[in-house]
Image (cartoon, rainbow, N blue to C red; front, side, top):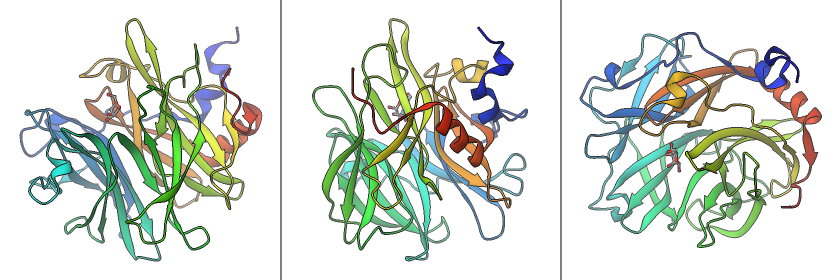
Length: 326
Ligand code: BMA
């Protein structure tokens, strides 16, 4: 067995020394936990995290935190930024969760995909914003049970593309892609990546993590896998590459996870053994990724890595296409 320092995963994502970078004690109002944040770099150069905040009722809302260096000095909205609107959107009556944010040049707006939660179950909703102060809701676009959704930042052909994770009765949850002419009406639903079986880290339940990254080689997709064990679930993150022109086609799927719960703040919390990235920013070099992830459903942590490094790793540690289930 090679020493851990030889493990190629170690070089892909490096945890920040100041982790966790945000937790409930930092909040200007009383909350239970803060985790699973969408992330963008604003035109000012600031990093904005749109965080999932869990209230002491157990329901969640979204709150924006801004920082000059993306690590320290966070200025957090003094009140919730986006609250569930159960009156007009009953699908949000149990809260809103896990936002992913993409800048869409054609719309000159950020599109937020988030989980709307109600007695009917979790579904997918969309909202548009240009400043993270005013939001224009498109409403629910995927009925329960469905979650873990992100929009591609541009149309392919003339259709918008959404990656998401419906939850069928069988319990095996795969990643799907759907298409829309107008962001509201979605169809041509296609499975793009299937959950594996048996001992794999990504058996039974998978879903996207942050938004996809457009590279020359394809859409780089970080996705989470859930391993069920007798001691509970373990949430980890791995990589796949989708075809640029036809993202329903998986070009490569990594064998191993690249980020899993290891540290105290990832292993211990409201939901232990969970790392759950929903957003990243990219530095001026166009290659260094700052990946923001929820740790143990309790706080937000940061890991940095190189996109080129991830593509190189995928080239060496993956199987072409989406391998068969067995
Ligand atoms: C998933 C989502 C995430 C959560 C994770 C671990 O199903 O609901 O919001 O972080 O479980 O509890």
